[in-house]
Length: 233
Image (cartoon, rainbow, N blue to C red; front, side):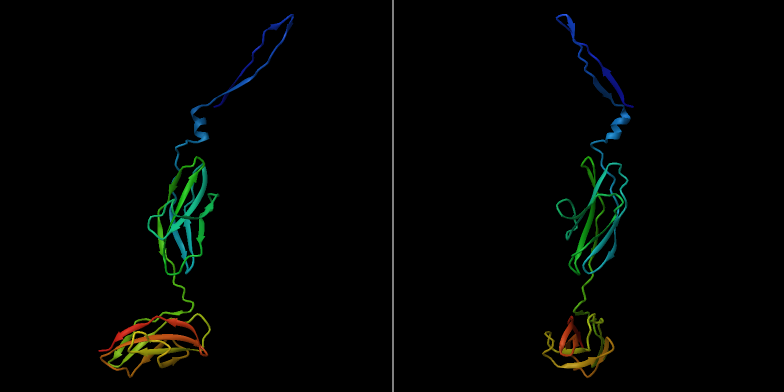
């Protein structure tokens, strides 16, 4: 409860006239409850709980529990590539409303691990930190094919399987060689038009073979696979 005291003072005489000076002082007396209303300078907000809800090849979407702190000031979202994320890392955004609890962090590298944390600040400048979450962004498959390990079916035969090209193409060209640097300088051993699987036969047994697949549009390569190796028995 606030109480106000008003004090009035009257000045002295000067010659035969009385000069009255009125000075009003306002004194505010605060109760314990009033101190709570203006905030404890050492008060720390409760930490929020952070989770990852969406991952792409270039972004991660975060969501966290809403801060209920009466003196909430802001959320600051941090991320890094090390498993210790703190104020020394790069802040990606500051959100000034407690109801804003979702943030998409963009312009990330594909196929890379990132760590995230949200720090809550209150009006007194105190803060608390959330848990750390991490994930690996998806691989950007534009211009890429993922060739799986070959499955040997006979002494001179095997099955190759790869991911579908994302770009328009005419056919897949399958290359094979007994040299690890297999590529377009070698001979095409198969063309595949409507599938992503091919059985390869007539290979020299007791030998190591390397394979690579290209998606081609006319004579232009639009996607390239990784190289895989197999040792025929």
